[in-house]
Length: 168
Image 1 (cartoon, rainbow, N blue to C red):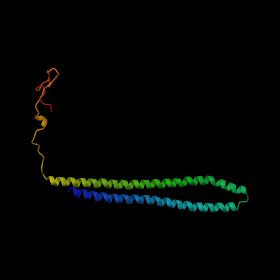
Image 2 (cartoon, helix red, strand yellow):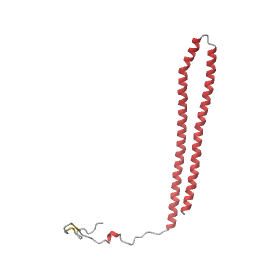
Image 3 (cartoon, rainbow, N blue to C red):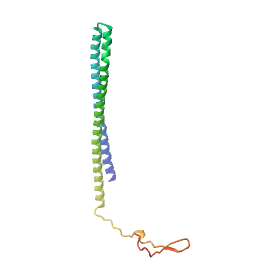
Image 4 (cartoon, rainbow, N blue to C red):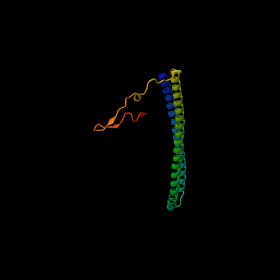
């Protein structure tokens, strides 16, 4: 009986662990996919902006115009950097939520499986026990113990055996 229960539990546990691993990997890979897409879009945008900046620098009338063009790009670059990291943070948060939901769903399934296994084990115990009932036919050891007196160092009785009849 115990071997059958252990076998069912271990096979279900193994299947659940495999499901959790694949679901977690799916969530992580979806997050990685989003980061890769973001990086590709960032590179494309950066290349097109650099091309436009190079064309503007080559068509500038003076060196001051080129310096002004470069100084105008700095605040935009800072904003773009913060926007990029904001997107990365959103992707990470979404991936974290997806992982949490996958693990929560599988944890709920594991608790359900554990409950089923306990029910199976209890059912097997009841089947083996049948309709037998437990009947106690002996008295507890302290009920039949003989009573004693407590005496002090001089030998006088501090308590008598008859003072308290039932200490239970």
